[in-house]
Length: 319
Image (cartoon, rainbow, N blue to C red; front, side, top):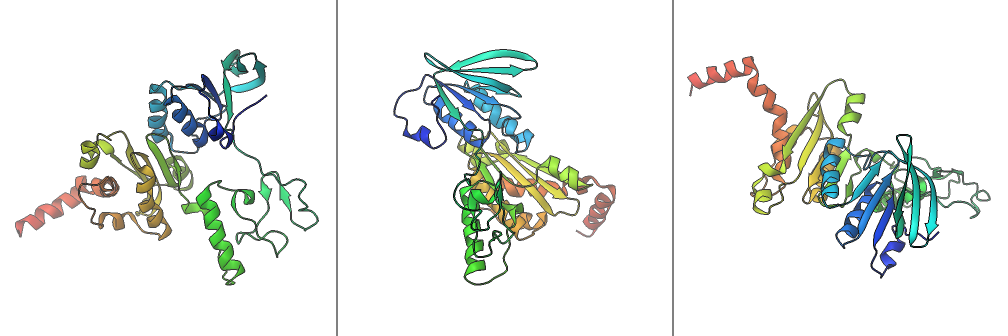
C-alpha cells in the first residue's frame, strides 16, 4: 500500500483530496495543518494523546485552532487494519470498544521512526545496539571506544539541533580530549503549527512529580502591546519554578514561540533564578516582554502578604 512519509510527501506534485495522517505528534500536526490550508480534507489518527509530550494546557490552544480550521482529530484510537481501496485507503479503527471505518485518498505515516541498524556490520565492530539505536555513553562513545554515534541513531530526542549538539560534544571529546557529556535537560523543541508551540525543561506535571512545592507563572499574549498591534493575541507563556525561584521549565504557545523560548533555554542552561529575568530591560513594544511579565508573577503573592504590606506602610511614613 503506497503511503507518504515526512520526507516523501514533499515530492508530491498533485492535489490531494483527503489526507489521512497516522500520528498526532509534531510532524503529523504540522503537515496536517499545512495540507488543510492547501484545501485538503485532513483526518488525524492518534493512538494516545495528540502532542502528548507537551503541556496539555497549552497544547489545547493548538488543537482547538487545528480543529477550528476543519482538521478532524481522532485520539485514543486503535488501528485494527489498513486496506487499499479503489479510490485510496481505508483504516478500520476501534474507539471505546466500537469499530468504524475511515476512508481517504492518501495516507501519511507520521507515527515515529525506528533506527536502521540491522545488517551494517555493527556486531563485527563490537558495537552494541538495541531497538532504540546504538548504545552510547554520556560522551557518545559506543562500546567500541574508537567509534562515536550521534543524532537519532544514538537514541533520545530526534531533532536536527540535537544532532548538532551531539556533533559539538564529539569534536570536543575526540579532538581536544575534553570530558564533555551530553545533558538533555535543557534541550528545547518547537512544533511549527500556527500558533507555534515551544518548550524547554519540565512540564507542570513532571515538576509536580519531582518537587513538593512549585510555582506556576502565566502571562497571556493578549496583555502584550506588540501582540495587540499585530493581531497575534492567541497564546500564552507558562513558566514553572521551584519554591525558591529556580526555573524548572517553560512552555510558550503563540506567535514566534520558537524564538521566545531561547531566553528560557539560556536561563536554565546558566542555572539562573526567576529574579534574573525580572532584571532584564526588554525593548518596548516586543513580544519578548511576556517573559518578564510572567517572571513578575513569581512575586505577586508577596504583595498580599500582611507582613509585607505592613512594612510597605511603615516605609511610606518616611516618604
